[in-house]
Image (cartoon, rainbow, N blue to C red):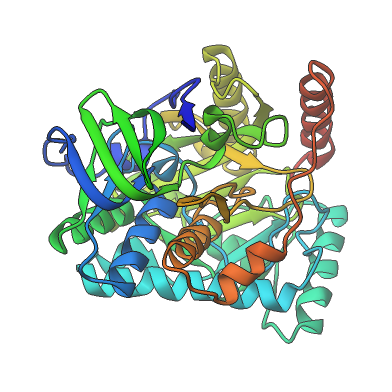
Amino acid sequence: MTAFTARRTPVHKGPAAWSAILPGQPAPVPLPGNQTVDVAIIGGGFAGLAAARRLRQLDPTLKIAVLEASRLAEGASGRNSGFMIDLPHELTSDDYAGHGDDRGMIALNRQAIAFARGAVEDYGIRPDYFDPIGKVNGAASATADALNRSYADHLTSLGEPNERLDAQGMADLTGSRHYVSGLYTPGTVMLQPAGFIRGFGEGLRATGVGVWENTPVTAFARTGSGWAVTTAKGTVTAAKVILANNGHLESFGFAQNRLMHVFLYASMTVDLPPETLKQLGGQPRWGVTPSDPMGTTMRRIDTALGGNRIITRTCASFLPGMEASDAALARAAAVHRQKFADRYPTLAGVKQEYSWAGHLCLTRNAVSIARELEPGLYAATVCNGLGTARSTLTGIAAAELAMDLQTDATRHFAAEAQPSKLPPKPFSTLGANVFLRFKEWRAGKE
């Protein structure tokens, strides 16, 4: 019998702030005992919910179970910065330029965004939680401005619109004099990720999909022609299983020593009072990614998204054990306070109300894993730092594979190489963290 046992279940450090700033959720809906379904999906984030929606589109009669280890939007899906990006955004590059068929990847990213927009419309998700306002690459130095120009040239060669902002334009947008330039691209959707995921889950429930929370999967095994999925709340017997658990694919024994578990850290201010907002200036909603991929991401939101707040994200750790330490979170929170003060010196005393860590999964060769692993067992995993768009896309592809369909998405992932092996431990861990610290230092003001 083929059996897979979880070596670990997700552990999160810090609150899921995007969920915390929204009105409270209804009580969790755990698995109500043993169930029999057509498809069981392990993971209720962007990939898992996308897979469930795509399955429902392809065959409305399917019985589907989504098994989420925590509450909806309190795992990794509620711990990102909410950028759903359509363009090449290769985190291992110097300026985000892609490494392959950029036009093909852009088309697939936009397919994922359109799919998410359809969920907003079909499930009555609040439109503010899916805001197509675009984003800006901010540059705080001449070196970073050169990266922006390089990226702009690359986008222009692809026929993609982009607009340069000067220092005054950046100040008008952000209220900060920190930036010397920016590069605006219109295709990014800015999410309230927790609001979006909560609404997505409730919409699926309304269509008859079982979305079960606080139900971590501890094992699954082949039984006859199907699978038995074990949880503390009961067993789910399924003809097919989709693993939509990103880096925790490795927790079940797959892709050993091929996945890079990286944690990014973020902090969010208190709800800014009117006098502080007046002093701040700028626009009420915007998102700025750094021109150097290892720089600092900033985002401002308004009351419709959970308060007038600014989010600061920077610092990264390579953690094969898939758990960030309290010390790492404290270090990052201190860096966030300094980065915020650098950008808003007159607001340096503003309190950061929340700080948290979010788990990313990358591969050295920037490939995802969205394929059939064994007969009736599929993966929708490895976001490569693009958790909203890429995970949505892997979820779509896994669902299509489970229904024996060949599409642009399934062909894309089938054509990707296997993830490259990592150097042996502890060299991979030490080397990766030294490299990340170097990249943070090199990013400097960014």
